[in-house]
Every structure is written in structure tokens, then in C-alpha cells.
Length: 120
Length: 110
Image 1: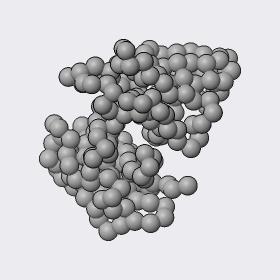
Image 2: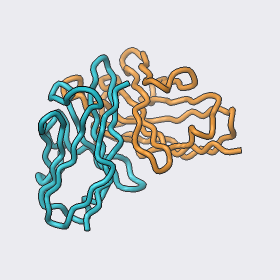
Image 3: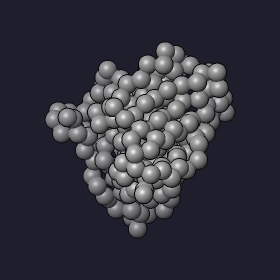
Image 4: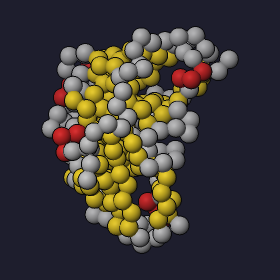
């Protein structure tokens, strides 16, 4: 069965970096794009962008350029989200979500979420 | 920048029917936006309910249905149950690999 398992919660100081992982299993990793979604405390879901798992080419949504980096390690079927120069407003739960197909254009499987807390 | 609009909150009585909508700040929603709907309960990951306007995801009860109503996408819950109390998000595909979430609707069943 398809599973997306994310790394555990992180507590970081402002200005530091964090790298969140999303390990996929149960399907061919390079056949489905991977998205990242942010949810700040008490707020809605916000799409951050996606990475083409066959080419490694990322696409970032408006507001998520510069400090945010999507990457892959296809040898272990894992996608990564790195956030540099962390700010307090980056405190949120970050989800990875598989893009189902280019035909249906929806998210079908989600990771369990990773809480990143930025505090001095 | 395109904004996807949803009702911030709604309430429904148990057994009742409710329709949540998903619109655009400018323009109409059509099937070409491939509207999809997600349910999220507190502390949980989102769950996919509906995709491609009206296709139920595997395991989703048939009391959930999707459609286009007028110029908006719609999610209808027929015979609401207590465990339908959740946040509901729509997503629209804007083309060129870009998607946008709506702000979400908090549904109360009481």
C-alpha cells in the first residue's frame, strides 16, 4: 500500500535551517510528482509547490521562492523540503502530498505532517 | 493573484444536507479547473474526498458528492453525520503545474 512517512518534529532557532523528509513506499517513486503543503497554526492549507520526481525539477509557488528548496534522493524514494534562514512565521505543519496523475490533477496520498517550530 | 473562495464556516443538523462552494475571485470555476475536495479533522492529515469535479475517492461514502453549481464548484453532503464535522478544502488546478487551495470551510454538525 502507498505510504508517505515524514520525519519528526523539529524545534529550530530563527536563522537556522531545517530539512524535512518524506519517504515514499508502495509505488514507483519517480512516476508521481510530490507536492509540499504548509499549514500554520490554526490556519488553512497552502500549496508550496512541487517537484518532478523523474527529473528533480522543482516548481515553487508564489511566496515560497528563495528560502525554500525541494530535493530528492531517488535511491531511497525520499523527497525533501529544506527551509533556510528560518523565521518565526515559518512555524507550521508541513505535509508532503503525492500528485495522483496528470489526468485527474489531484492529491491522492498525504504524509502525516511534520511540525516545525521556530523559536528563540 | 487568483484567490479561491470558500465559506469560512457552515453548520448543519445531523441528517441534513449542505452544499459547500468553491469560487474564484475573478471568473468562474469549470471542470477545466479539475476541482478537488479534501477533509481535515484536527490533528490529522487531509483526506481526499472528491477529484475531477465529481469523482469520489476510494472509500468515500456516497453521501459526499461533487458538482459545478453556477460558477462555482460544490461539495454536497447528504445526510450529514456527526463525524462529518471537519474542515473542508477545495483545490483548483490553474494550469502550468500550479494549484491553489481555498481558505477552507469549517463545518459544524449540531
